[in-house]
Length: 198
Picture 1 (cartoon, rainbow, N blue to C red):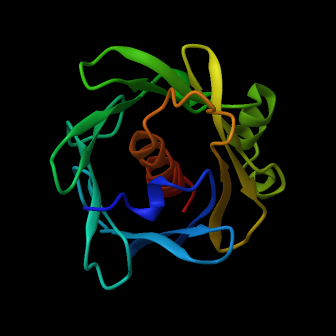
Picture 2 (picture 1 turned 60 degrees about the vertical axis):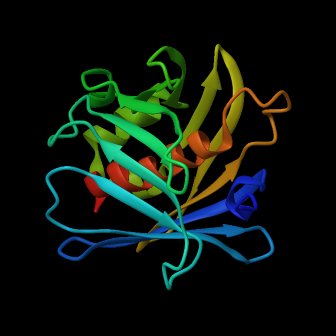
């Protein structure tokens, strides 16, 4: 089976349109506007189970993200290939650290911590949490690192009714981060962090 286009793009756009009571829809677009992936987050779920598809008709599932517990405080989210069930690794939220600055650990398929996803600016993170009205004026930037090396970045765009990010994996010239795991990180930031702001 051919490698999904989703895992071949170094740069793409990630969007989450949200409604508090209805869950949220996620779409990833290539820079030329092609839809790369779609998933729909169900509302009122106590344990996240996210399925990522190539199109909105959900004809081919390409990624499965499964939480290890019902409450997302310090939960770990495993990322699987939907066709082969290969486990690429996991992302684990740093509960206490994320109170002040969003922080996730990246684990390989054996459970070893390999890197992190962290909000770039500590002072912006502080103001986003203490003055909610400023959150729209202070877009988030997340740095994705493996063994201390920057491999990707998510930069939020200013939008009123959607969470939108420009995603850039071009710094990962040595392929340190499996692309499906990187895409899983993007989806989780849209789903979990976006849910908090919805």
